[in-house]
Image 1 (spheres, rainbow, N blue to C red):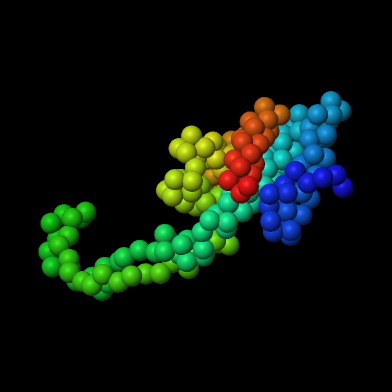
Image 2: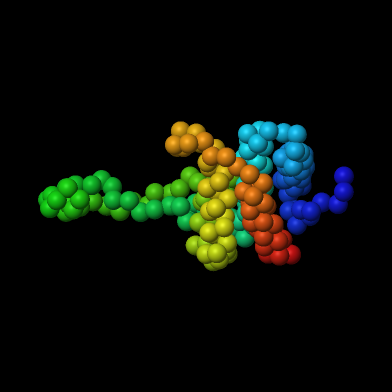
Length: 183
């Protein structure tokens, strides 16, 4: 195998997983560029490439988060204070009530390994580690990746090499960004 493009990922298992997915993406890309394949088949392969590229982006963001934050940092961020038990004194309207109770700290069970791509993006943006512009681009990747959920679709979307190239461009930016933060 040639020199890794992901040497900045210190976890060797994660780096190996990223490299394997990257090779899989490259093979799928050959199919998408093959004029012998029908457009419908290419659309499905493009979607698969987008899903896998999103997974690589997620892994790179995971690496960044893991390098800067502890599991407790994540749990504290996603913890909350909740009124418990709640005693209603007076109902002003269906959306406005006068209540009493005790605030109780509810610890989050969500640690680093349980974060999804959206949560990673939101956490990094809230901590100032990524700009709103990068967050917007990552949201684009996340939305494209999440379009795999058929129950939420009115019509099955067709994907093209244009969609793939857009996700690749964002993934390249994320890769360079994370690599620069880890060196």
